[in-house]
Image (cartoon, rainbow, N blue to C red; front, side, top):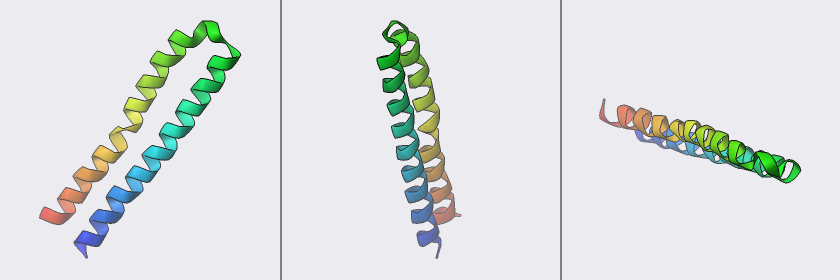
Amino acid sequence: MNYIAASIAVFGSAIAAAYGNGKVIAKTIECMARQPEMSGELKSTMFIGVGLIEAVPILGVVIALLLIFL
């Protein structure tokens, strides 16, 4: 049962991160198309947001490892 819970934790966090990254990148591209002069600032903010979103699957993997080995 722990293996199923671990796989659900990893799968759920990966799907959530993929959806979040897609939304962030799509909105950034949309904003760059509207205001090209702010593209540098928007890109740096986007990379910070994507980095924070990518912490979710890492935490999912940690939770999965805890479920398997503890």
